[in-house]
Length: 70
Image (cartoon, rainbow, N blue to C red; front, side, top):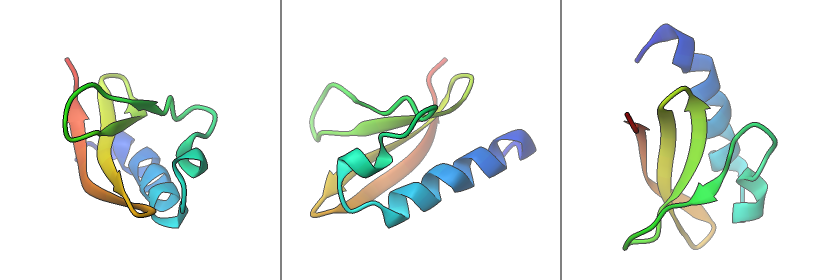
């Protein structure tokens, strides 16, 4: 992982870990939004083209990935 992404990823992953609802991850600067497709996934902006994507099941984040959109 690029060093400049590390801190921002940890902040978002900590938020995902502590959240019990999707509203709990919808924080300023995270650009939280649902993605199209099945299974239903969501995205949190990290930096530039990098985002953390995940599924949400029973109050927990599942299949969490760091992806580059460009």
